[in-house]
Image (cartoon, helix red, strand yellow):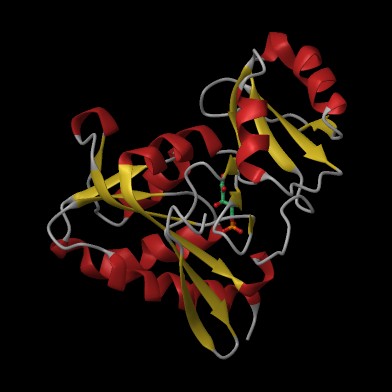
Length: 224
Ligand code: 5RP
């Protein structure tokens, strides 16, 4: 199976986790694009979506799915999103698509985070994928220095501006063995808007697309 077929398979499997009659949280990325396309098939059964990016909003609307402002629906039962890496405890690196800040906000508003990935995203330790950090532009060098002192090699994502008008530093060379602590430390650097480490609020469920079918992994705050 190709990687796209694995993504499509896992996106379809996520429909089982969508509560009927409600507004659901929808993430960003190529796997989520397949999920949005699948969601179109049950659009009459859901009230709509809160979206984590302009790109996902456009795709949802193109399918006739209503998009709500999070301020009008501050509590969601479910948030469905992809990840760049996920570890055995359900901690993730996200933000490869640059939507990490809105993703983190919506994840926090949701009771259940359903992560949809193909098997290539499973890792024993986070960090091979460069960790995205959204930064206020004037703090670029300050934040980069702090990240270097934490063992990383931050590189500005060239020509990229987030939906919130900020830049992204992609931090290479990390091996994140204590993701919750690392997330807290990066959060405390002035000028950091969001770190794309989702460990303090990790996934509750991962649906993993493999050539043998979709595997479901469940995480609890205790195992995280
Ligand atoms: C976007 C994200 C995505 O979930 C992540 O980059 C995975 O994307 P894809 O499904 O295209 O592999 O965090 O900010």
